[in-house]
Image (tube, rainbow, N blue to C red; front, side):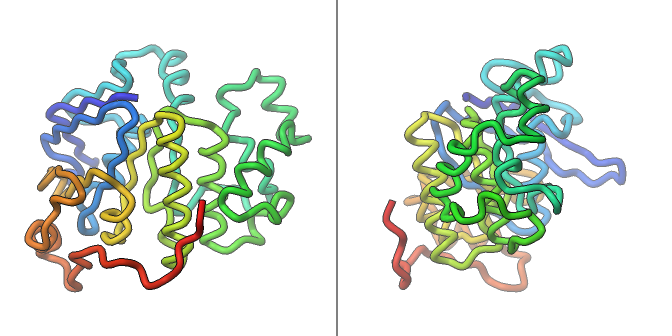
Length: 264
């Protein structure tokens, strides 16, 4: 899915400017990571792209359509093509993992099938297949409140893999995972996007993972794009300017990982 943002601004009710005159072009099938300090606007940008927030001004085109110019039905159909991965997935504690994963297609199935699946999972085989890709096959019938934070994040990723969204929007999707597992999980996500030709945008605090796994890096600061360049062209000076106000210096290079990466 192609994305076009022009002079995009977002202001909150308290007066805070989440995004300021932001321009961004993303071609179908591209993969990019958004990095920047806390409060830079990364989550705000992803929520605008997911049509969860309406911008204050500017233009948003998703796949050639302007979401807020569509009627409610057409906008809902557009949303069914978008997949959001949350840092803390909003999963009901008592829900079974299989049901959480199958929810990825609720917007695509007929109503009768969606309702029936809430009672009796309609595609356990499909759910098991995507859970296996994120090393959670043994949790198919576990309750969500029995999982760790990192496992819940992987359930959220499995749901979007099952959905097969045209645009995947991931907000700190691996923040609760150890470095080796985080790298492996991002590899699964980027490989899936590449195989399907889907567009993938992820916000990451782990700069070294962003540089290692994404070909394009967007540095966001104070709601504006500070730089937008290939990962190989990002310099320590770029990162120093991006994180200038951070009390802890970010990782400025992507050294070869000392851990063993899972083979895909």
